[in-house]
Image (cartoon, rainbow, N blue to C red; front, side, top):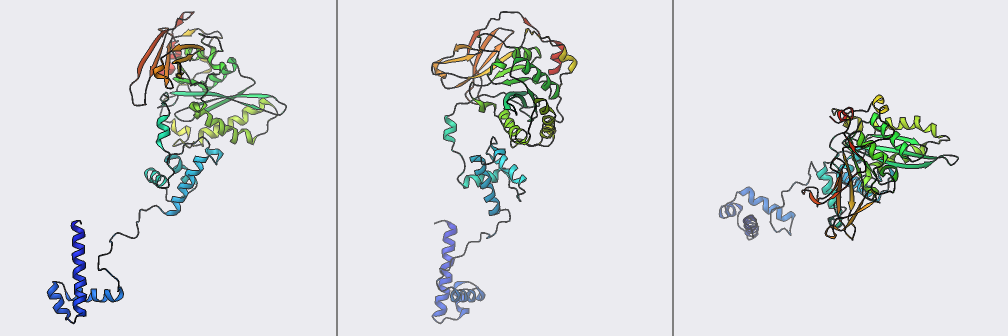
Length: 416
C-alpha cells in the first residue's frame, strides 16, 4: 500500500474509534484529547455516522465532478458521426476526402458545431470510439514516391474525363490541378488527341502559370502512343518549355487522386446541374464554375481557397505571344522524363513501352525512373520510405535518334 493509502487508512481508524468511544459513553472532550483532534472534528464524524450508517470512514475522492475544458458529449457524437460518414463515403461531396482529424474539423466548422475541438482532441475521441484504422494493412502496402508540391505550380497533374451531351456528341474535358493550391483549369474538346492536349496545356500555362513538373497518366495522348522508345508530342512540348514530365504508376488512378477529386466535384457540381445541347455552350458555364472553384471553394484537404493559398508566391504565366512562337514540330530538348513503376514478379518495369530489368529483389516495390535527355540515360532509383535516402539501382543507356536542343532562354526565364 502506498504512503497516501496508509495515511487514509490510519485516519479512517481514528474516525471509527471516535464513534465507538462515544457509543461506549465517553465524553467528546475526552475523545478529542485522546485522539488528538478537535471537539468539532469528533462531533462531525458522530453526525456523519448517523447519516451514513454503513460508512467505512474513508475520505472520498477530491477529483472535480465537472471539467470546464471537457468536450461536450453532443460534440463527441458529431465527431464520430462525421468520421463514419467519411469512412463509408455516404456523402458524394466527401467521396475522395481523407478521413483524418483535419477533414473532420473542417466539417464541424461547416456544420457550425461549437465548440470545435483541437486536432489532437478529435483524434483522441475517434480512437476512444474505436474508429481508428489499424496500421497493419498500411504497413503491408509498398511505399509509392510522390513529387513534392511545396509551392504553386511545383506540380500540375492533368487528366481527361469523358461525357456525352444530347444527340450523342462526345465531350472530352481536359483538367489540370495545381497540387499545392488545388487551383484548376479545364477545357472541353471534341476528342482526345495530342493536338487537343497541346491546346489545353498552353491555355493552362497561360491561366495557372508554367509548372516545374507536369504529371500525367499513361494514356497514349500523353505518352505518345504504343511504339517503344518514342517521346510523344506532349512530352516534347513540356521539355520545350523547360518542364519535367512524370508518368504515374500504370492502372493506379488513386495515385492521381487530386485530379480525380476535382473531376468528381466537376461532375456533381457542374455537369449534373447543366443541360447542354451543343459543345460550344459548355465553355462559358465552365468558366463560371472554375471562377467559383478558384475564389470560393475550399477542398477538404486544403486550409483555404486556391486564390488565397497562391498569394505571396511568384507565378510565371505563358504569354500568348510566346505560345505562338512554339513550332508545330517540336525537337527534343534538354530535360527529364520520370515515371513511377511497380516492379513485376519477374523483376522488370516498363518505360515508354520498353521493358527494363531491375531485379527480383525489389519485386512488388515501387521505383522511380528518370530519363535524362542530355545524358541519354535512364536511371532507376528506389526509396523504401519517405524519410529514407534514395538508392540508385540501375543505369541504362537510352540513345535518342535525334539531337537534343537546349531550352530557349524565354522559357527558362519562366522557371526563375
